[in-house]
Image (cartoon, rainbow, N blue to C red; front, side):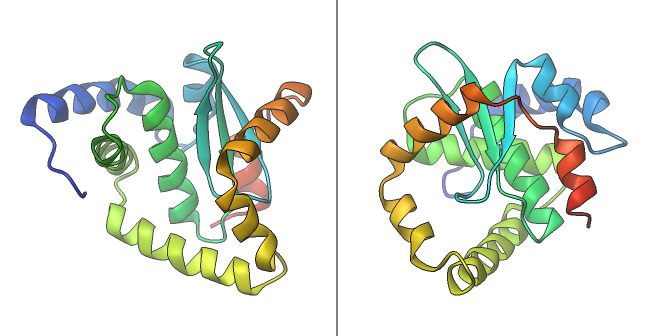
Length: 168
C-alpha cells in the first residue's frame, strides 16, 4: 500500500469485509456480493479489470479472464472495494483502501497480485493483443464510455461461469 490507512478506516473496512465474507466464502464466488450491491458484472477481453460508477449511479465491474486465478480474484475484490467503499477524492488513498479491502476479503497479498498482474499484462501485450491494448489504455475515458454502453445492451455474466471456463 502506498499510503498508510488510519486505524479508524481499517476498522470500517474490516467491518464491511466481515459482513461480506459469509456471502463470498467458502465457494469464493463474487456473484452474491454483486447482486447484493447492485453491481452489473461483465467479462471482456480488451482491458484490465476495472469498475465504473456512472453519473446515474449504475455500478459496473468489468473483468478480464486473467490467466492467474490469484490476480483475477484479487483484482475483482479490489474493484469491488472501489464500488462499495465510500471513498474520498485522493486517488492514492482510494487505491490503498481498495488493496486493503481486497487483501482482507481474499487473503491474498497486494504485492503478489500486483506482480502477477504485471507479468500477465506484459505477456498479453507480447501476445495477440499487441498494441491495441496500449492504445485503449491511453484513451481510458473514451473506453469507459464504450464499455458502459456495451454493458447496458448485454446481460451481466457471472463470476462463477468465468471461474469454470478459466479454472485455477
